[in-house]
Image (cartoon, rainbow over all chains, first blue to last red; front, top):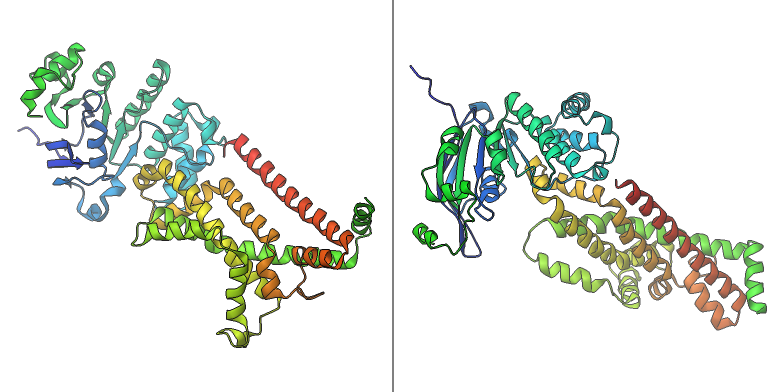
Length: 253
Length: 230
């Protein structure tokens, strides 16, 4: 008998509207515990928006988002999540104080904060920078610190919004190593990217979205072997998904 | 030219009257700025962060009050503290406390309006991250006030500048009483009318030196902090 995958997060026909424009359209999906989920799609597809909706930084205009978490923690699902943004936001304090600040918001005592901070800075290779101001770090180091800060919270789910968008290949490699380490420590990764090689390296499952619609989803190997949706095929081939392409009329836009 | 040398010799000889006037001026302005900071900064931060009915009206009022005429404030405080006023029983009129109250009222809008702008800008940068980390509204405000501390210093300095340079309100509510409520600005006004230009000029030099020194110190602190990027 095959074990049923454990549900983590359900998106039920969610829509998001801003300035009269429908940006996310009737999107439904069930994230399961385990695989690294990579959301891909061209710029403006609604990837970041979808992540922010999942993380509750935005509320859907329609539909609902349901977390499937342990009963004792249902009162505050926000504490199960963390998010790292495309552009890391560094508080005006030291590297270690940035991590400790996040932990202090969870009511963790000072001794435990110190120990956990030291641990995650060690795991991300930032220990030697602990006393530096976070804002003097390079962009790659800042992104690594943002990951360390999120990891310190031991989230069940970590949302990553194009975390390597502005990084060179070396820094990207370093960040991907940290992402894999976070995943191996038991945190679910839900990440957006428009970098296809990166999606191939990291994804266990892929969600392809275009113009606010989920057009295809499935295991990464199946998706990259040959997606069924023509927009996904065009995206993989490197064709630009222009807004005024005749095919977009099929989406009813 | 003789007046200038007389003023310098007064300063060098550390004339008692002059020292007392300078001391009282500093005391009144520093206390007023401290109180105005404690009220104005959270007020400015709250106006930047919280959405409540009438918020936009409050922003417009705070901005408008930055140019509040000191004599009008002096008159209002005078009416409140005079024997027939609601707080007349406290007997505060023509005391340094009355001057502190008047200066505090003048400085609060300056610190609140400038703080609001500083916190507003910082909030644009921090909003998603702080919400994502689960910071409560109070914690968000405290974080922004702390992280914006060096920029907020500029707001406090602007308030201090206003307080030390102010003459109309303290003249009305303090009465410019010798050895009691006489401060630098009211003394300068009085000494000029008396023709005692040496003392007036001496006080003027102290006032400008003080203002320059405080601004220079704040500038150095801010620059050092920016260099450390903390």
